[in-house]
Image 1 (cartoon, rainbow, N blue to C red):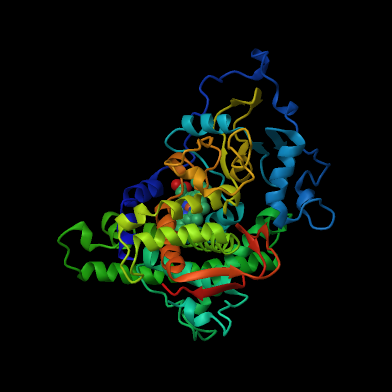
Image 2 (tube, rainbow, N blue to C red):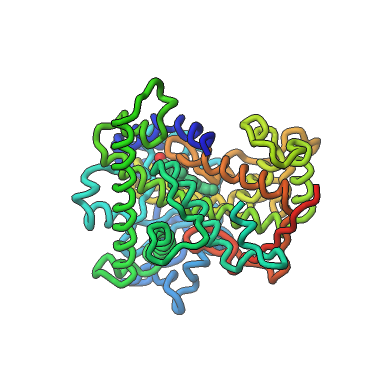
Amino acid sequence: MSHVIVCARRDVARITHILKRHRSQAAVIFDEITSPHEELPHVKPYNAIPGPKPIPILGNTWRLLPIIGQYDVSDVARLSYIIHKDYGKIARLSGLVGRPDLLFVYDADEIEKIYRQEGPTPFRPSMPCLVKYKSEIRKDFFGRLPGVVGVMQEMMDDNNDMPADFDNEIHKWALECIGVVSLDTRLGCLDPNLSPNSEPQKIIDAAKYALRNIAILELKFPFWRYFPTTIWKNYVKNMDYFVKICTKYVDEAMDRLQKKKISSDNDLSLVERILANEPDKKTAYVLALDLILVGIDTISMAICSILYQLATRPEQQRKMYEELKRLIPDPNTPLTAKLLDEMVFVKAFIKEVFRMYSTVIGNGRTLQHDAIIQGYHVPKGVQLVFPTLVTGQMEEYVSKPDEFLPERWLKSEDENYKMHPFASLPYGYGARMCLGRRFADLEIQVLLAKLIRSYNLEYHHEPLEYKVTFMYAPHGELKLRMNRRSE
Ligand code: HEM
């Protein structure tokens, strides 16, 4: 874990910069566009962009309403494939209640252009429910800060099967890891005998509901914008609990820091470093909260997805095991940065899972200036969506896109696989790229190295379908079987 924190330290400068910068500052996306489309005859008007037609009053939001809408919330991933199939490389979803148009861009060259030309402060649309919580409900607390956003063995039954709610256990583990990084503490979430009223259990529950409710708040009709619905009240209650926990542990870190003898920066944890550089404790509270909110579901859902893929792909799992056995002949050897770096197949497997089943199905940017995209004039303020799940599987950008081939990521392979560098970007790109990327990659690699070196994973049940709850992951009971390897 200490290695993880050392890695995260490199990001401290970026973290403090992010907290201070004014995010809404304009970023020039396309400076060649300064005049409206009427003056550029070859440019087609915005209204000509194809897309599902909005109906009066309900606009396009009804499409996400259960029963009457064609699409269920959990079908958002399918929706991004359907939009591409029906409308092509650019499509407009307009008339969404309470939010600007969404413009889906499926052209990796255009995505590259937009990312590369964005300024130092690109703007990614925030989740409206989080914005409302921070800027209205708990305005006093958040003020003007923008924010940045060996137990497995005990769980097996006599057949070596993991419990049906195994994803919950992964969740607890992700929470414990993020607690070390963002709160400088062991939260105790992995204790097998937690009482319902214990702090770790309450944190686990708050994390589960705070995050799962977001998909419903964001994607269904936003009644909560107009009156406090039950789900909104629960969301606020859970967020309040998180704020309380973050405040408590950051205060404790501050007390420790004041008593600590420091000879170099290496004596400080990530939280202590932020506190040492930033006199306002609130910065560390907000940072801790944001890291926890984004760091739990992303990583735990990614792990569930990767383990499911391994369990259902025995040949690829065997290759991973061969690599691990070669690099770590003694399974008890401590993992070093060098060893992890040499695990090329492990890294390629992770990338391939992200290409075909990207945990975050797409990324976004709010256009800061008018732009020409795919020959259309797009006005500033429009929210661009880059559906990496779809672009990562387009034949035009990726060879054999429907085949699961970790080998495509290995440079030494004889076969030259085509891969557009902007087609599969599971962590986003540029100045707003995922801040937890190194931490997430490292956590996943360490887990796979330890698990697959010593256990063979199997799955003997009905295939699981991938769906979006908050993240894109296999939906249903993840009943993996873990058989201990003999060598
Ligand atoms: C597999 C796990 C993860 C995936 C797939 C993922 C993906 C993403 C993506 C797509 C973005 C948007 C990037 C952009 O706009 O270009 C993002 C932003 C972010 N992620 Fe992650 N993430 C993961 C894990 C984590 C973890 C564990 C943490 C915390 C330790 C974290 C912290 C953040 C933060 C703070 C941002 C906002 C950065 C900014 O706005 O400057 N992420 N992540």
